[in-house]
Length: 319
Image (tube, rainbow, N blue to C red; front, side, top):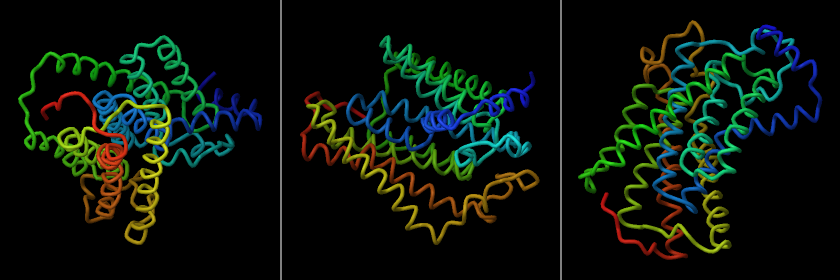
């Protein structure tokens, strides 16, 4: 059975309840889920470890978007409308590699490698499989796309694991504010690839990294706390994050064209040649919006938490 035959067979056996279930699973790969999960982990579990995952995840998403625009491969439902794909609003860019499969592999794989709890180790591959399968079932990806996404994610996980092990044994002499120079890296990557996805990922990385360095130097909020305090952190912090995300989108809307108007399509000039003069400059507003969301997650919300719940007890670490 070829790729098309597999997708047609899956859609032929579709049911409304299974469509709803697979739609819910596929939304586990949305930016909103990862924003919420990473933020809560940062505020309530571990700042440094979550920041590493945050940067790895954003870097993975950035590379995924770049590869997609290089390969420029269409999705199944764009070639074969008879597939009757569902939840196509979660499939607005090119097909290969699957961003949902790659993101799930990086996020859950990192948790499995670092947390090392039995339930995480068991749950991680199950979630990755379900997210990848949902993309096939809904007719949103070819088999090659989800396999490619998982493989890309595994390669990035392996590289990150080796790098973090190497850095763990090295002494860092960086001091604040010299360490703020690291924040220029996401800005440079955004200028290299000024797409919508590049603005989102590198904007969030820029804001989160800058906020982390300042927060660790001057704020140092208390991560641990009573259950009601952790719940309040999540409620207040996520409310602020999503208020910024959607509020700024509405505020910037008059200045930003629709994504479809500036997204590169087959036959259009590649991003580096188009530059800012052909519409990509509008993505500067997207970069600013996501930078502020990242800054809220690692500095704004933690400063508020310190005001209410106090400062952490451990000695201040140099940054």
